[in-house]
Each structure stands twice: as C-alpha cells, then as structure tokens.
Image (cartoon, rainbow, N blue to C red; front, side):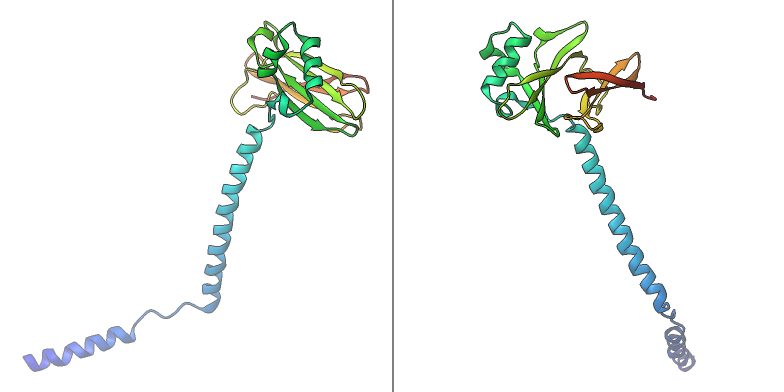
Length: 199
C-alpha cells in the first residue's frame, strides 16, 4: 500500500505543474500597461483641475490692502471723495484690486467698513489710473457682498473694445443670483445688460 501511494504522489505533482495557466498574449500585457498609465494620468489631472478650479473661483477678487496697490495720494483722494471718515483710520481698512486695461488700469476699492454699508449694500468705487494723469472715478455702486459660498461678488467681464474691461457683478434677487454686466463707455461704467441665473 505504501508503494502505490508513493508512486501516485509524484504523478499528481507532475500533472499540476504541466497544467499551469498559460501566459497571457503580449498584446494583452501591453494593453493593461497602457490602461494603468492612462488611468493614473486621468486621476492626476482630475486632482489638479479640481484644485485649480477651487482656487481660481475663491480668488476671483484678490483684494489687498490699498496701500500695497496704489500710491498714497490716490488713496487719500478716494477716501476724501467718497467718505467723511478720518483718512488715517480709513487707510487701515481700505482694500483694492487692480486690473490692466488697454489704457491704464482699473482699480476697484472696497471700503471694508460697516460705516459705508446700508440698506442698499456697501460702497464700492472704481478709479481709472493712467500714467501722468490724475485718477478718475469711473465706477461707484452700493453692492450687497452677502452671496452664497464660492460666488464672486465682482470679476472681470468680457472685453468690448473699450479702454477698460467690463465687470461682472453678482447680486441676490430673492433666492436666485442676478449677473449684472457693467461696461466702460469711454467716460464711466454703466449697466450694459443683466441676466437672472438658473438656480
């Protein structure tokens, strides 16, 4: 009995080794390799686009302290023209955002103080700054800065061939958003059109 069982054991191991799964064809190995690389790139790009998309929408209006954006003389002009606040005190809270135009820059000012907010919203002004010329106020509006998360109050709009770019402003209308498009007419910004956005 021991002889027959010892003869069967090597026979079974031989059968197992000869019946191993054959290697897949070369084209299938290459397809799997390229699929893994493509999937990895897809994941990487998805993460990068997601991060870039979030950061760009959050930073649509990169407000900075006005003293780091424009000269002191312009800041004093803006404060004295639009408020009766103490200039030194107002400088501490005044924020600015500057964008390039075809001729000079548009600099928007956010007074960032409850003193200049009321039933109509908070005061925002825009000045046209050009070399060797005094600053000219071209935009003034009371806007409500309370918007849903990740919705920019102001962002650059389309270029309609004027010296300064258009501005897109979002405001709440009931429970929906309205986009107001202000464009420069050569003298100042005026409302060009608006549209109620789908919720």
